[in-house]
Length: 110
Length: 120
Image 1 (tube, chains in turn red, orange):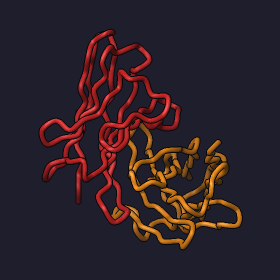
Image 2: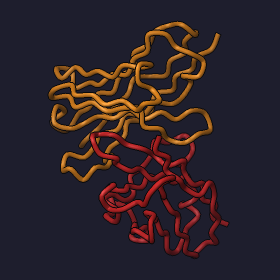
Image 3: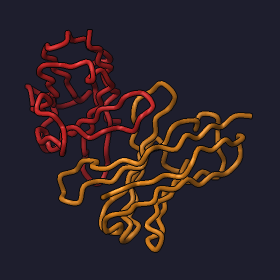
């Protein structure tokens, strides 16, 4: 079974830059998987941040950006704010209508 | 405005059946895939399956295949997730999410979540 890997946790200083990644247990992530990113704070539904690798969803600040770095999808937050302290999930479309979410990264801003 | 509104929290006993719902509004319900996503206590998001309301084409994650049923009633613009015999391990928050309609393959709108608690 396909496993999508994310860093379990990450820490960034306010105003700093952090890059979270999304990989595959076997193989490389490419744009063909249409990587998307979701932000979730405890007690709330996920919020869509990035789709199609690098397109920001409506209303998402431009300090969030997506890319492919090497063999992984990446979410970069530039100029991190305290509001960005959340859990971040990537999702990959595996084809045939099937999806897999990564395990999520808990981001701390301190 | 696109909205997905889910049914309220449920408390059930092991072995009981349950059907939770997700009603879409503000868009052409039949033309967008609706997914169900599970979040067990303290855990991450897990894709369970997806349905296309127009023809009820349905896909399931191997981890839930045979354990749940996803269905839809187009006339009510509502998707459903149901269990015939709940287990304690089904305790989770369940989200419905709309897949975008432009073949960009992402979830562009989310329901508020339904908390299901299964306990004796």
